[in-house]
Image (cartoon, rainbow, N blue to C red; front, top):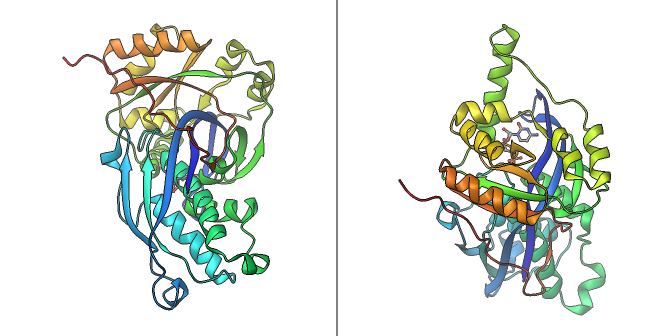
Length: 348
Ligand code: C5P
């Protein structure tokens, strides 16, 4: 059972104050892009004696393998979000009356989204794993039991997804959407046309939790007059620009409150943002918590030009091009995944 899910950029990321649960209230506009994660869940051994329900807390995942760019950076243990997603859905299913013959499984992840790059690569793995595991559970349920099998509809997947990470519900939904709460409460947004992006990846990642914590510290400094405290307003202009399908109208509406925090943790991002500007991008901003820099372009050819010029400037790990995607997480019917091409700058 294979399923696909897309990475994302945030067109607008407004961050409120930290909440008692450690999360921040967000007003964000997510856009899925055509960088794809594929998660394959394969039965490798029969259910243990007594069925999986005999040990409901034990993982059903026997092994984890990863391929694609950045594969070596992905944890293979119980902290892997795809593994957590498989086990969370299996546990939900067992505690809601699903039949107990859940086989032990191998999980394989083909990575197309950078690791710790601010593009929801791990969340996309969780979303794809939920969709693949739902199909597995449907298939292991004998036809005679299907009527009383627990309903694993989109709402159940979204609720479980939100437990795994704030971006997982968006990775299930895809397209372009307004996110509030922690980012998990979603309203799909209308948009016209396709947005074309050049992306600059760094060779190291940033921890999302640390970038949010840095923003809190910068804001505490701002309160003492040390630094400016600029917060993104409402994304009304952005929502209107999305309806025009005109990238030149979209460009001035892009904003990310996390950008100053990401830049202060990785000062080299300033040079990448400058290089994007010099390469002629319509706009450039840090994607989510970074360090990926997303550069909005007029069309595909312009994106190739900006990606190539930015890579040649030499401050980035690699660059690639992508476009907005209408897709959420879905079963892979074959032929849906290709490794993205990347431009790697010449080594000094
Ligand atoms: O939900 P996820 O595990 O992706 O979030 C990673 C971390 O990012 C959280 O533990 C939290 O520190 C931070 N975060 C936040 N507010 C959000 C989303 C994430 O503070 N809305």
